[in-house]
Image (cartoon, rainbow, N blue to C red; front, side, top):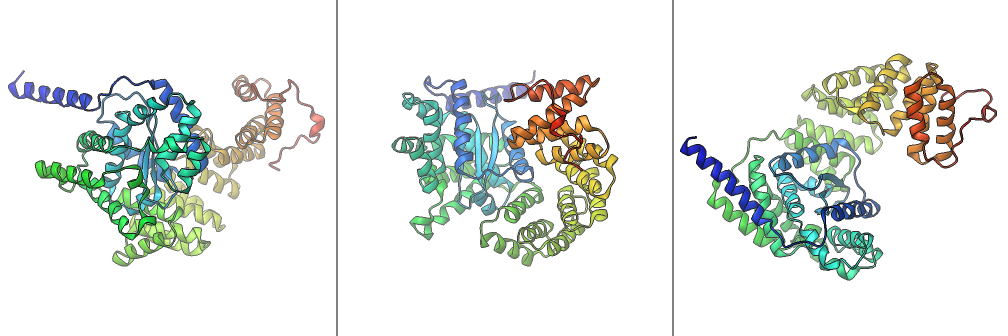
Amino acid sequence: MTKIQHAARFSAGFTALALLLLCARPALALTVPEEKELGGKFMEYVRKNLTVVDDPGVTGPVERVGRKILAQMPPQPFHYNFYVVRDKSYNAFAGPAGHVCVHTGLIEAMQGEDELAGILAHEIAHVSCRHIAEKIAREQKLQIASLAGIVAGALIGVGPVGSAVSVGSMAAGASASLVYSRADEMQADQVGLVYLDKAGYGAAGLVRILNEIRSKQSFGPNEVPTYLLTHPAVEDRLAYLDSQIATRPSLGRPKNLDPYPFEKVQARVMGLYPSGKTSEQRLRQRLEKAPTNPAALYGTGLLQAQAGDREGAAKTLEQAVQYRAFDPELLRELGRLQYELGHTPQARETLAAAVDLDPESADGYYLLGRAELEGGDLAKAEEHLRKCAKLAPDYGQNLYHLGQALGKRGKLAEAHYYLGRYSKLKGDTRNALFHLEKALLLAKGEGGLREDIEKELKGMPGHRDKWDPSENPDGQGPWL
């Protein structure tokens, strides 16, 4: 082995050891399994008190950036989950066991993917160093459910929602003790910066977004960003990052990142989850600066559709597709609008192109299957709705339309099975039992299907062994 190889190996080993020591903590009273349990309860509070965006077009790109950073880290004790919260405030937080949340308002304020990466690296570092676990160890006298409420109240902030969560957990006073300390913030930046650099982002993006967050303070005490309330010492953090860039100029140099993926997710946020007039103004300014910007056209089209102007939205999205013809996401949204406007042949053509370009999109198959069902091509509708079900087994609306397609094709056992699963997902136990029990009756000789049906029925209250045909004597399902 050459001296250079020895030096490289020593350097890599030393860096790994340094990071382990940097995150080293005294023995914690909170074990990893306990923190995982706490993380689940924490997310229950978050979902109850905040609007978590259930949109792969938004959460997928955020998760991609998070996974890119995690790929540079040693094995973690938790599986990290990334969420986007619909809220115009500037905030991001990481709950116990790797539940990382970013607000739509903060995403809107960013200038590029490196800013998102900087925020996520910092939050991932908080989890990796187990800052919350260390603080919670002092509150072990409380039950996990109460602790989850305390943590949620602390990280959501001191505004109305954060206060309500804390009060609801009967521990409002304890929430204040769980806000990150200055030492926590500095350590999270030190650790996060290492992996941010390894992932190819550097520190410039984090500096930019911290400066943007800090600038909001000047609008008065009621406008102080939530992020600053839960993440103190922003001036110290900026001084530290500036010193690192001065020592290693490569950390501050612009990285060779394609701006379009982030511009598009940001446009989707502004179009579908806008922060009032601010989103509209931002999109308008971008189009004034670059009228052919496909991401800005995309966001504007989504915003028009949200306002009820589907015709105008379709025209705007057609323009976006002209400048980005091979983007399956733009094609899917255009096809969705064409379908809603009743332009079924056009929708089928547009959505077929989207599926060809992105054969892993469950939403693409679902939209195409619906258009084919509307157009009377039942075989194709079944084919594509089945593909969606394979990619996204719990996609409720797809299960419903797949049940419709199968019913119209005379495949009644499967039709009842999928309609039963759809009803079960909706929490409609009565209809779920009706469809699943009828599916079981009709699935004679279909061993695999019977096993699936029995699995769905297992443990359902009110389940009986035999279906009474007198309940529906004509034997017809709701698809006709």
